[in-house]
Image 1 (cartoon, rainbow, N blue to C red):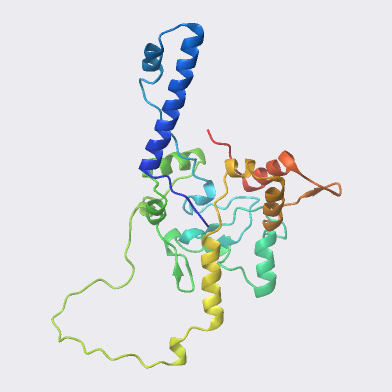
Image 2 (image 1 turned 135 degrees about the vertical axis):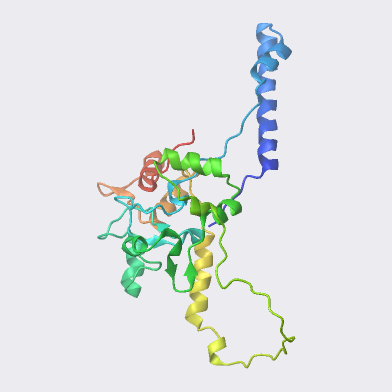
Length: 264
């Protein structure tokens, strides 16, 4: 997934642009209707201009132990959060994409909701892959706890305080007096060379991580071709009464299927 983080500098620049636009509008209205532009600017901009970040999507909040009814029952890696697939289930309990993987491999890639529920939220593992606390995701995406808690409240979600704590896995560091180790290069064996399928799977995971995050605004800017391609990729029905759905109607179907909310 490709994500763009709004830095503080970017937010400040956006605020300046918005302020300049408001001041220009005030100046034009002042010339037209004859009021004091400076006084009007001081009145309107006394509290400054706040540029809000987009609301955090529900699927990008940490796993909270609740299964969303109507959504696919497979688990997605989701940058190490291992959360529920947000797509609508079509074939039994799975969406079209997860079902195709299941038909090819006999299992879902990162487990199911039943398996996710069977252990504590921060102890879920898939092979050697382990879930990361949400604080790691927050730091990578420049999110504050206040923003996260606000989004969670909107969805009626309570976030476990442990999600805000960084933990170090492995044995504790113990300092002992010991002789300097003698380095010997390891013998190259077949065990040290990962099988091709493992390398291929890791590359596929990396490709999944760079999939672009989809928001309400992003969907509304789709061209007809982009909307159709996105719908086909995510197994969203693009035909109605035998005819291909186009334009705003298709965008609305995508937004409804993914549960996207318009910006506030």
